[in-house]
Length: 139
Image 1: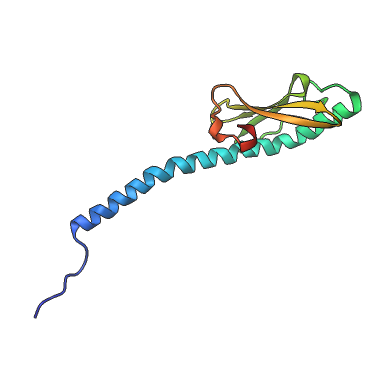
Image 2 (image 1 turned 30 degrees about the vertical axis):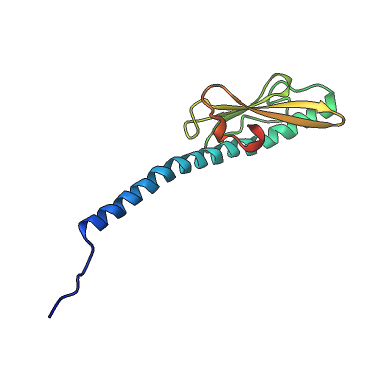
């Protein structure tokens, strides 16, 4: 009586391990970029309060605020990946990130008034911020 073969051969197992290794080599960097983009988005969400404060100050006074206090922020908001949100000269909002994105990586939001509305120009600031981590409207 002949016995049927049971199990896998060594070559079959090695092929499976090689395929898993190739998939992991592709997926891990993509996932790391995805998580960094999510952390950058967190900073833009935290800057929402600063944007509102800057817009209200401008509509009331006709000039841009130059610090967090004049924009109505009690202190610099922080988050999981955000170390500070600072309102600076001419109402420019600077979001600084911690090591979860890249240490001292920054995004700036620059206001511009025109025809009854305020538009925001978003840009990477400093050398630590990679543009691929920015949302599409900031690239």
